[in-house]
Length: 301
Image 1: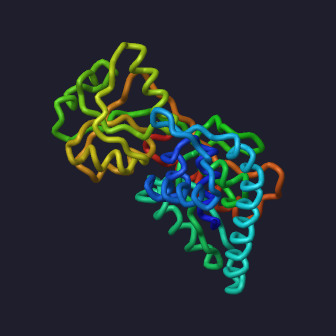
Image 2: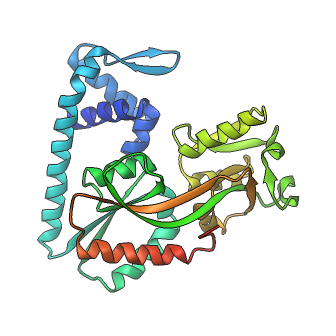
């Protein structure tokens, strides 16, 4: 067995699926499934039972989890320390920032570039993934700070609120629904949809909205980032409901956005470990990031 196989096992146990584990690890679902199969073959027994397309942990998996989690966390700490020592040899400070994947496509490059102009001694490492992954990255010290949706699902954070926004409907520029100033859930009856994956919080909230009006969503494409959703919408494959902050940074695509009702409010903040002093460079970047995000056209909406 190897570390990657154990990481995959831990991620599946944490998320409950190979899809969730793949998102957390930045791998394809097939790669995670392959790692799990290899680990089970090495161990000589099954870690999960497959029932109706879902994975159910075996008693053996539950018994292994604590030891595997401790080993994986220890190896990851060693790798992070090695990375920091390597960067330190060049007399530079490593700043680790956790953000949603879509923020790295348009928003973060400009913000980081501005920050680095006044901090030549800093190396920035971006960790990307779901909000759940970002929270865990802050807690296990993989990230110095993380951009998270509020309220957070985990404890032990210092939280600094950044901005609020709402979900918007994104559609191709020539879509018939563009004639409406506001898109209500009833407008989406029989409309092909590009939806964020089932592991996302917004997906669960949307499912509740659809159920409330007895509407079955016509899902055509499932994606795992706002950027991907906007790109598929731009190709005419459907409309999507995403958060307005990230959607605003894909306006260069042939898409338009409209307010969505019922409103889906979003609040975002920066998460830090509560039990550790905050280095000056982390505070400086946090203030820079908050300032730039507060200038977003959707901030406060």
